[in-house]
Length: 586
Ligand code: 9MR
Image (cartoon, rainbow, N blue to C red):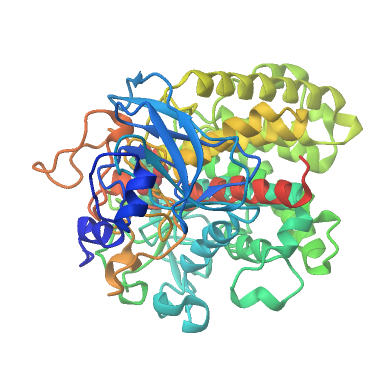
């Protein structure tokens, strides 16, 4: 466990000073800084672009608020809060404080009228999300498996390499004629999935797709996004270098003999909270599954398309390799359409299993048809039959819809139109939900990884914005960003290393074992939900309200773990916003 207690860490940056009178005047007269330790003011702790919608939430009776310049204490905006609204998911009532009209760049705090309760500082600036976007990509670098994190790139989070994965055992469940159980294969690289040291194809697929999508839509922006990773000086965009670290590992998970893809590469059981190089347990590739093979085919087909005409020769060459790998995987999946993943008795790590894999089939079919330019392979009824849901690892059909909707291949005109209509209608419903929600977000279900769902809803809205140019999608996506960065029922900015109240005790083995008080930065934690109420033991109680049921404790794997598939949509959303802001266009 981290040595710094959360309360102490927070108290160090803030002190509550309550006195009568307007916050601004009082603060100035007293020459004091005060802050809202009781989390009455829920706000985006990083900030906003000048022209963004700016909404904070107030959990008190305050009828008036003002925004002050954080440096001078001068009041720059005065407003009235809206009537309180009760949110059944958080069990509390909040008032909207809208200060969208404040557009002047600066550093500010929001104070409640009639008291000295003020938020911490936040910025209004054109480059407000630059650092956090870079950090969200860098977090994946920190999770590289089989890789030394040097002090040059990792500063205090430097660590030796662990899990070379150059001698991995074929588990009995994965045995084949050419690779009987116990065969040793090499499968190095890739990212650790999360707080554990295992690598899973299903989750890698959606994660890699999401980052490829960022590069597909905003290649110029990606090329200017400089991240301090060792590949920084090569000609490839850093975010692509980072995603290649995992994509190349994925390629090694395909059995060259038949095209089938192993579901995961793993220890037999989760190990303790130790550094990667201390975990010397044998590693296994486990069972080929149809789900993993279809997801693999989908992301390889996508990668092949995205890199096909890249200015970089290495990526164009990789495009050919990915296309071939996708084709072989699809062939295997056609021959083996229903091999569900079944956790072997001696393996207890993450499952990423599913009993319904029609979504995976649709996603792979759509990506393959686009890559091979075979519209006939994707008849219209298949698209019309898709049920729109927020994409996540278990229901990934919308990824195929996104690819189709964005396609400019004339041969897919009908499919593309239908996909765009489906996506717009779904995104429109999300916007309508956020407009009605007291917390101004679309999320109305809280599963393990709810923050990933919020980020993916923002992603869908930004795709709808791209397709239509309608700014309502942008305003609603901003609400999702605000939520993730602090305007939520817990008051936490959910990205490590950012905000005034940020997770300190994440369920992440390196962060727990490295002796550094601060967690590895740039990770989005899973967030509130009630699916596992007692991951910290029977005596630790969490809120029964799902949107508030979060605890910043290392033991809370169900709310405070980090995971590659939650970071990827955060990177997409922030990157897309940055790119649009820089170019001032959709
Ligand atoms: O994100 C996954 C979540 O949807 C599941 O409910 C949960 C339990 O199966 O597993 C989560 O994924 C974990 C994976 O199994 C192992 N690595 C850590 C992942 C995030 O907690």
